[in-house]
Length: 307
Ligand SMILES: [Zn+2]
Image (cartoon, rainbow, N blue to C red; front, side, top):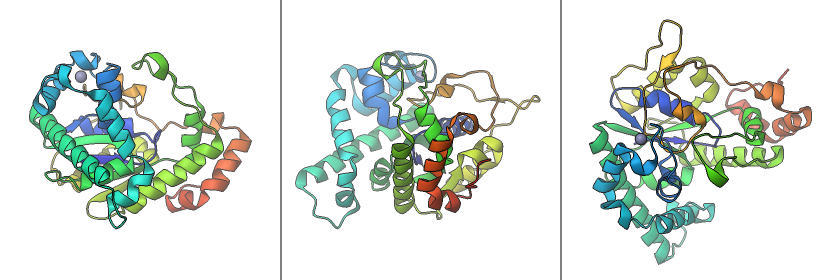
């Protein structure tokens, strides 16, 4: 399993799609969303079908869980999201006394995910499953799962871009109903989340033989170079997707759950760095975000001055 970890709005959908276009890799988007967006809300898969009508997910569910109508998705979603709360982290890492019911919940999560990934591998025929669920606690649980060989990409993006994205009422055409408009958050809350998620991800997944750190901006500027780095991490021989003569990419169709609207795009896709934040972010929000996040911005090689 290749796990993409880090803060939301960091460009994981782009990386996910690039990887899914490589031989031997099956990109599933955010598997964490399978219970709520898949089973409960029956939202759209990246292939354009509803989750319940997508032949890929139907086969995966039947192999991993049996008859889809017997799956208690509300309970599985509740148990998963309870387990992913940060207060559980010390117990999952070990050392802190762990109540018996949390140990049971960890075992249940790992058993369920081992079955899901095995089914995804069997149905897709891929050797690697790419999951961009991002939550580092989720990744930590996967790391301790028997049968899963885990590699991780810590994906980072300029905090000012993330804060501008959080402030944007992004309409996701693939998601209907109350979730159509994604949550909006202010610069201070966004900055603190950005710091916390990236610091936690780096603490759980320090760079080494099993983890690389990639910047979204580098992925978008040179997609093939970034994908080659991930292929090396995976020990996979294949080649990154080749651009067409006009520089666009044809990334095929992937059965991805959740992510930004780019996951539904088919046909030639132009990949360029999204720098809308330079126009959109008000000077006050920009200064506040820089002031709160500068230590990690510097560590990741970003410039503090933005003009
Ligand atoms: Zn599908």
